[in-house]
Image (cartoon, rainbow, N blue to C red; front, side, top):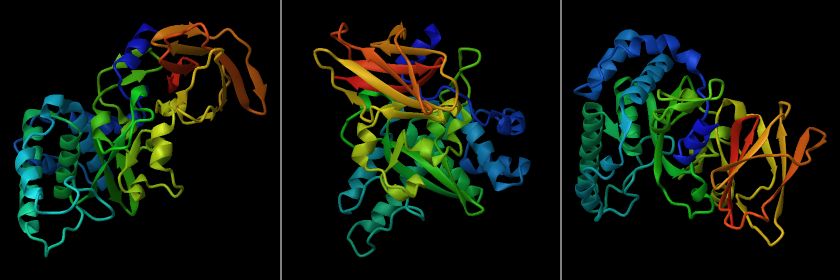
Length: 347
């Protein structure tokens, strides 16, 4: 469990590699590609040469990006100054988002709009060129590169902006745009894709090891799973019919997405902040489609094995954790059957 604790501590994003077998034959080809391309079109041409269907082409692109592009905070804001200056005369969101078409329409009659659009195009091209040649990016670079190559491949691709939630300290924080991802549309079906998070590797539940290679969970992720960690600025980009408010998203617990957590349901508590009283005994009620044989919890990264009473009622599993003797408790993570499921902030 030591590697698991370390994995949670460093704030990585997913604990299980999903869809890996679907990518095996594609990876066998893509992994022979160069690590760098001079232009996005050259990468697109190589993919078009090796794959026929649009879905396989999109998977090949995801495979190449997540294998060869590394996340680097130093890349944040590259080339942004000129772009931001061009925005001053245009009263629109400086970070273009997507609805069902490409970038938001700008008011063509407004002074500076034409200049801004031209600068924006140049800005995006610079980012993609830097990412594909240098192999480093932040989410903006991953997302723009994915879209630009998709454009060359004639695959409908949207650039989506919104709020990411992947750390316990994100619970309850004010909503603000801080992440970017993509939606592609193939044969009238839309797929949610986050190549940034797909590049970080994954925790293999069976071997209990961190695998430093692409994580395929974030290609075509279920909208119900995706919304637990990604809230789009335009809600239609959630691909969900039911409405979840920004406040509900930010206030909810932190769910750790992976294949084996898809049938895990947290019933109580619904809020991500546990308010510790003098005699704080927190009740948890969950639903899980597998027999619960192990409950472990981390408080401030210290591991405890649950030894208390467990109740079973019509498919629901209940248990209580006593926080009374832990005066400095700040964070709690529940691990069910040795799989991280959900995290809470403690106040």
